[in-house]
Length: 168
Image 1 (cartoon, rainbow, N blue to C red):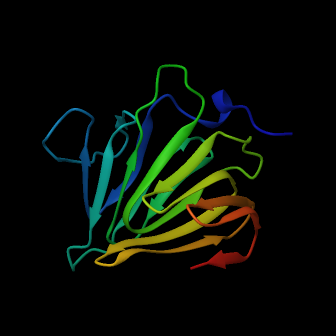
Image 2 (image 1 turned 60 degrees about the vertical axis):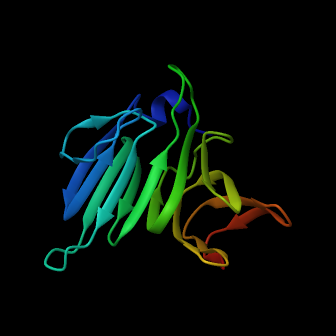
Image 3 (image 1 turned 180 degrees about the vertical axis):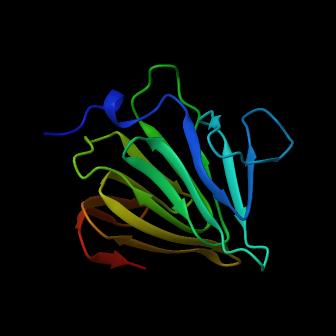
């Protein structure tokens, strides 16, 4: 049975691990601050991870007990602000590799991943996104490790991509 949003997601995202250079920009602020392990951050925040050469980044932001964004290289993602009590979460890819680990039983419409050229809906399970904005457009690789993903762009639609599939 699909998991209910209240049991899947925390009201705020939590920094579980922040090894390396990890910065957070909270909504309606202009100053980046160091991420602090154990601290909760509001949705609408942007997370930036930068490799500093000496420490390989190892970063986990939890969206719920079994729901997380994992980063192990230079990357940046944002979360969209939500209304109090909203059930869905939206992650915006800005650059780099972002791994998503969510329950395979995640209900439809509870999680979206967006970028300027595409939108992934109805994610469930584990998936990996490599994204960069290059001079002549966006470049992305989307891999469904376990579970499913639905992918939409302005000129294409993949209604269901299953485990062990990827698209570039």
